[in-house]
Length: 334
Ligand code: Q9C
Ligand code: ZN
Image (cartoon, rainbow, N blue to C red; front, side, top):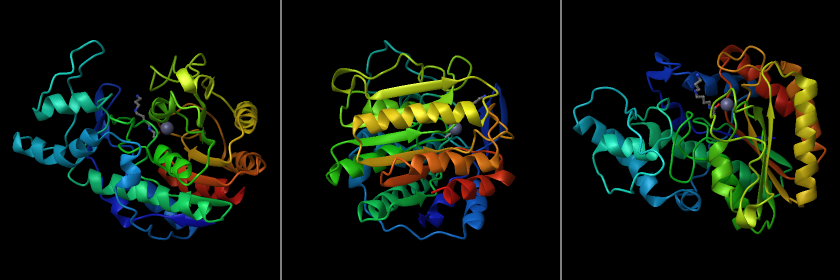
């Protein structure tokens, strides 16, 4: 299976994050990618397909903000990474503010995701890796793997958060649509609900979003991913949320994934994007499921049995010493 990664993706390295009310080391570290790379025997540098496929998903003002925010933050006299702290909660007027502090809150949905001067370059490389895997599959490969880092599924068309800036799964799915696939599915099996991907395709009848994740009643991102969220308008019925409780092991996870796969088959998808997070692993430091390393190969076999061309993009997974083995296990099942 072809694998893609750009060294630019190592550059984004925030110092700390606000975790449960305290500053801790940033969990989404560059070493995550290095561990995966050494376990899977390296990766190809993606071709640069430019900004057009990113603009097909993301708001132009938001992309400009991601590029400009670090300099504006520094110009405001701030020494560290840019971190939002004031948010225009639902119901505020859409003010045209240009103060960097106001823009940070406008474009963020949480305070856990710092922006550094290297963030745009890394996020852009991550998107190019997702596009390279997608195009390998569009060109005839059965599956391809994009070692996306920073991850993407919490980022919406015009917002960042959850360690994510550009929604690499959505960019991949949109590229498949633009290449002529009339029905595309995203299967998201990261521990967390992919609120950004859900929002991006919420009203779309041509892209099915199915997610197996920790119940947002107990887990981040809290405000999305509940079982009664099914999409709206043309997208009504093309969102499927399968929340599971703390302690979930492989049997229950596999059964939920089977429900998602049946729905994707019924929808008639001809192309699959998989958002893979290894934060469902039993030892993950920020998560509470109990999958084991060999379980990922079993999940992958079930997905492969769907028979769809599949582009796999990396999302979360924070047990750094186990991350390589978990990704290698997943890829071995395809
Ligand atoms: N105390 C991904 O896995 N922090 N993002 C939650 C919980 C954010 C995870 C704080 C977790 C985001 C791609
Ligand atoms: Zn996650």
